[in-house]
Length: 285
Image (tube, rainbow, N blue to C red; front, side):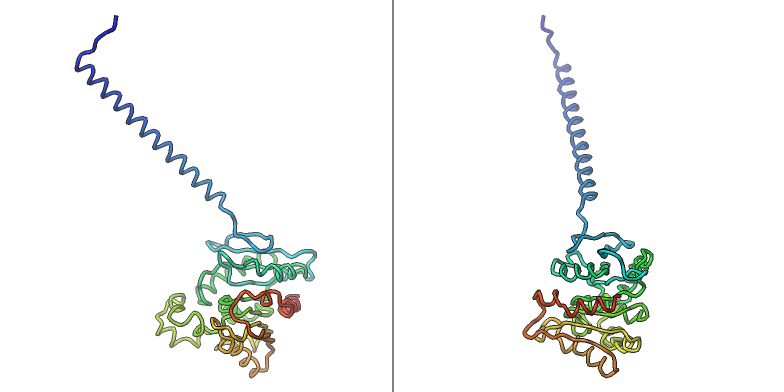
């Protein structure tokens, strides 16, 4: 016999069903949160490493991403020679560097770099470089690398080289920035130096590589650059040309290759420059 329910009993039943529905919904939300959190954790753990143009190791120096592409074959010296590339950014070095990196490898020379951000050769950027240099020494690499600066990487490598001339075998640049006033300009660079534009302008000669290049000349550090003659972003005359003029006055050696009609672009001649590769190999070993 079917039992009839009183009005209070019906209300209680409906209430219990509502509570059950709420509990199930709450549990579903919590479970979904756990799954999403787990998926996020997996995504972070499986985040692809920095893509290098040639196979190598990506690692961190404190909170800065760094890389090293090992040489092939036996090293020609007990202390492993290497090229220090800059700027190391999320998309750099890029595939255009593959050709010369492979030739460095084949010559027994490794390639490394560290992401110092948009530091423009500032003291803060140099401190990041110091950390990376110490890590490379710990790994057994040479205490005198050849520095290679592409575009604004010229500011980073020249600034560090000038602050540590005895720790540099040579320096090379691909349309390198050598003057803060030329690029990125005082207004943009000031923040990286923790100065106002007026303060940086007043102290420019204390920081600007082109104004301090005599330090490298006195240390007999050989220089090389390839720089187009119609570069509008990093003009030849204010950068590589100015450095060469200063080096010549000081009686020091700098080789400058000037491809006619080339600007600040991805022309393969900048990245497949035999003279640059020969210069690096000669001075790294």
